[in-house]
Amino acid sequence: MTQSNFKKNILCIGAGYVGGPTMTVIANKCPEYKVTIVDISKERIAAWNSDRLPIFEPGLEERVLKVRGKNLFFSTDIDTCINQADIIFVSVNTPTKNFGEGAGKAVDLQFIEQTARRIKENSSSNKIVVEKSTLPVRAAETLDTILHSGNNKIQFEILSNPEFMAEGTGIRDMEFPDRVLIGSKDTPTGLAARQELIDLYSHWVPEKNLITTNLWSSELSKLVSNAFLAQRISSINSIAAICEATEADVTEVSNAVGRDSRIGAKFLNAGPGFGGSCFRKDILNLVYLSEYYQLNEVASFWEQVVSLNDYQMERYVKRILQAMFNTLVDKKLAVLGFAFKPDTGDTRDAPAIYICKRLLEEKACLRITDPHALENARKDLQGIDDNNVEYIIDPYKAAEGVHGIALITDWAEYSQLDYQKIFDKMEKPAFIFDGRNHLNHRELFDIGFNVYAVGKAPLTHI
Ligand code: NAD
Ligand code: UGA
Image (tube, rainbow, N blue to C red; front, side, top):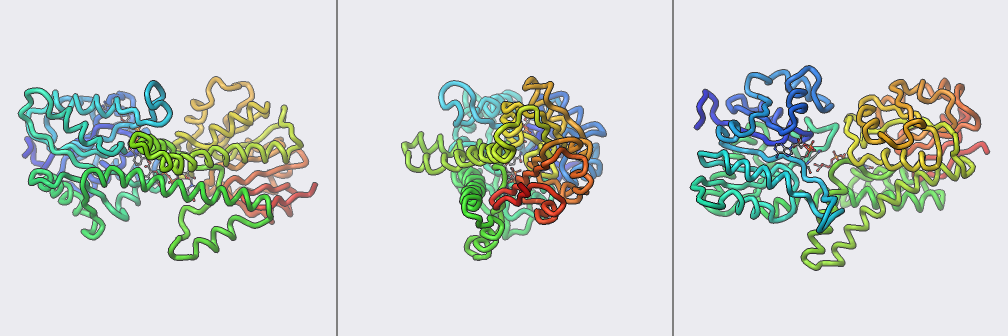
């Protein structure tokens, strides 16, 4: 038990997109638990303690304000907090390795290992260590070895509890999860630790939504969930290419296909390619794992999901180039949306990064707009043809005098814009490339636009 009036001390190492929101939900739902989030980044912790949170996620701010300073705390004193904790969630980043063995595919485990060593060095009581980060299968074995190495008498019980929330809907996903997955060892101490986590989640998650498995199944299920989701997007994007060649309509096809209850309608929206910090990384992790076990056919099956995604982003650029008479030199393009999806300011691995770089290579001048991601966009494109990129918060200003509009993120407000007003101030012929099938194409065509929507025949006046 802990030193205060709280029932337990929960610690989360890593105050990022997962650590911050997940712990905020736990603190809101479990007032008798003290929840502390630590990070090596002083700036991030300062931001969590300020009026301007480091990440934008609908519903997050009010929940932080409700419990911050009561049972939710943000700190940089990692060592003291480790020592005081009963349960430690590890939510540090696990990016793709960009050097040495496995570069470009394997997970860079340095942050996880540093965390494990720090937990070991600063613990004077037994602890439950929970893998919240997405990790390769059997990572718990490595953690176990590090934590129990040397003369340490402290017992650490390792659980796997991967996070399935998606950005933009993170709070809802955590408050009403389809499932919470807990992997543990099948030993008395493993099962007791598992029960502690069940007790925690039972505050708000119905029992039927709590799934328990062994450690390796839990670790693998997280990778497989992301791989399956991404695979559906690549599947429909491959069909979008066929639609553009044949005048079939991808929206009609995905509707017809998704109405089969065995297939289901979700994650069948064609687009410019999937982005976000995890799909690519987690599939490549699965590819690396398959190669490691010499399952080469399995590896190439999953690798194709990523290749198709690269192809889709390039196809979007080529369509713009071809439609605009095969030259973009000195042409102005408004880019509507830079975040990898709406309702987030996150731009990690956003298709917009690749697409904008390619458009700049073609010597286009870009006017980028996004309601929440312009700060990140600036960082992502820093040093790349700075003179030809402008960042403009007002979409009307961004579109003034441009030759074409490329919609890359389906922010709700972009479907509400006055496109007649925009058209009137554009160069003619005016082009619009709806990378998300987010707009009313017939209306745009009637206004006078040449409309190129993903997976659909173009509507043109030329
Ligand atoms: P993030 O980069 O936003 O946050 C990670 C944080 O960990 C950073 O603030 C970093 O400073 C901190 N950190 C790194 N090493 C540390 C150390 N040794 N001690 C203390 N802090 C340290 O990453 P994220 O998006 O929150 O993702 C975290 C994990 O969750 C990843 O494994 C990711 O795959 C997984 N995940 C992410 C999402 C998502 O939507 N972003 C969803 C599900 C799972
Ligand atoms: C994804 C998963 O949905 C989460 O379950 C998982 O926890 C998370 O990854 C993770 O491990 O990080 P996230 O990347 O936040 O969540 O967002 P998604 O809604 O999955 O979208 C990912 C990308 O796919 C976006 O670029 C989105 O625009 C694109 N997408 C999604 C499509 O192009 N078409 C679709 O039909 C759905």
